[in-house]
Image (tube, rainbow, N blue to C red; front, top):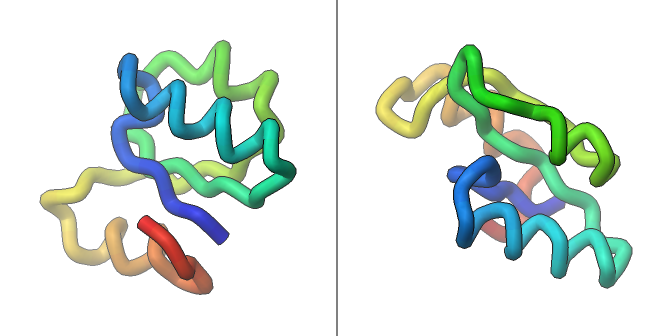
Length: 67
């Protein structure tokens, strides 16, 4: 599993796109209220939270090999 933070931004969205083109599993860490419309077309897992929140970061990292 790959974890991408910032997946709604320019760089993060391109990373998600490239991983999915390679059929790699992707989980994204999203802040509440983030626009998920494009990500919903990418078949990714979602974890709501923030990189500054240890509990949400821990949830997001479960089973992840690459961040």
